[in-house]
Length: 438
Image 1: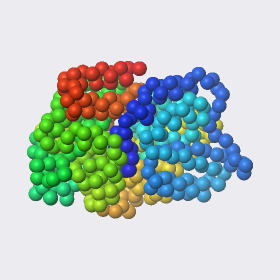
Image 2: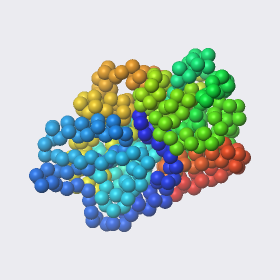
Image 3: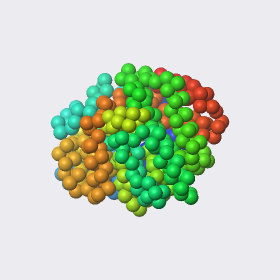
Image 4: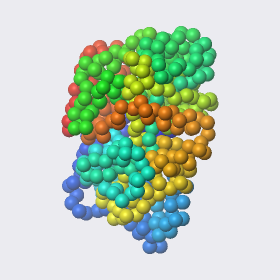
């Protein structure tokens, strides 16, 4: 997972935004249209026109438009036309555009969808874009059997974001995240809820990263490199029970509050409004959340069963990627723009941490040197994790985009006592298995 919108916006009834059937049908239509149609055009001035689509907040739109202006100044023969929206409608629109051969030339991509588009030939092989200054993990994150189809803009890590002010109000200090356990977490969050009126220890998990981290702490993966599930229904039951216990013990608010929070964006979430001491977020969201709550939040490693930092289950994830449409008429120009986006110092200065800790190491160095205190803390947190990481997550298989909604739905079934933990885990597992097997 985005500073203002991505990960927690995903909680807003994901199935209503992009059901798997819509995505599959729309992208599959690409194969039925033969060779007709393609993105790319020329304007009245004879310039090459590229369309660039991204999701994001107003602040991201402003920064991206400045990046476009800077690119056009260096490339006066190219006209880049921006199209942006919030996360909620982005994927429905993109699926429809691809199905009708009207997709943007440049596509901001999320790893949940990379294979759904790449495996159907909808993405351009971006070989030629300079990734010589990237860490290998950043390159691997966007590489499938079809080649390099996603260029990582930046990396981030899952975090447990802490609010020091809320903890202080409860008479607590920010815990040592290199030694704490899930039992420590339960005790701390229960204390916050008990001592503070109208505030709680934590808000509900952020999926699917919450489950991915939980599984990684046990040496497993949600999906393997072959696309098959890497866990069992019993593993999922243990995960659901963990969160059910946090609800029963008072760490979480009542189920109706959790359901409402699931529909909130970052600034209206329990973390963003200062009503929760802890929340699961991605590292590049720290600045936006801190701005929303009006004080500096702190990124922490997740607890583990052992209390050892190397068992926290975290990994480096592409915060997002730049992809090209497989049918663009202007592949060279698309690559030129993507190269500018990820490798130019000017674009890096405008993006800062909004699209993650820059993947280009030279750009990263200059960006980090110019960050404010909150963003610096985020960058330092991400880089400090490197000695502890146990490898990255495999690229999600087709159908993975449905997993998030499935987990949220069945967590609510458990929280509202509409299904037992065992039943919810079995039913959720079957749905996830079906989703990724398509």
